[in-house]
Length: 223
Image (cartoon, rainbow, N blue to C red; front, side, top):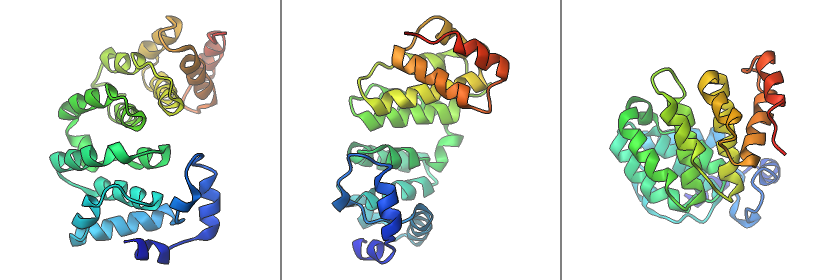
């Protein structure tokens, strides 16, 4: 697989992308653009040629991890996706790979998925928690689910920047989708102060929040 990826290397993209994933060892980044990786993931999955690659953990390169995530996205069966996620998530060590994970069968299995998310949110692994929050934001901020979804995110307490940033993103999205329910968490100072202020900042920057609501949120910043 390394040979295939190096044949797709774009050194200019590599230098640009390294700036987006601080702390990553440059020697572990090949520099393959995501559309190319997505195309390769689809080809490997549909051809049934990805089994050995998926078993070869941990991978050496960031690009291999990204390809791994995109192959999981192609899976059609919920249980298969979960099995592969359980093997893969312990090796995820950056936000970009984490946030690329969007398994297709999750949308049709929300009731089962919620229990799986609860397990992720209890993890001590930064990117398991972040992925759990991402799935909570992606699949449950709609009219079918009530305040218990917001409480799951509000209860998260972490010293990890990438967990707290996702929690803030979750609440900014919740304020856009479920204002009446979500604003109570801001009014009640229910969030970590940094998360509270970052959620307000992201909401003010959002086009999904009304000007009236933005003005109100500005009065709710914490010091």
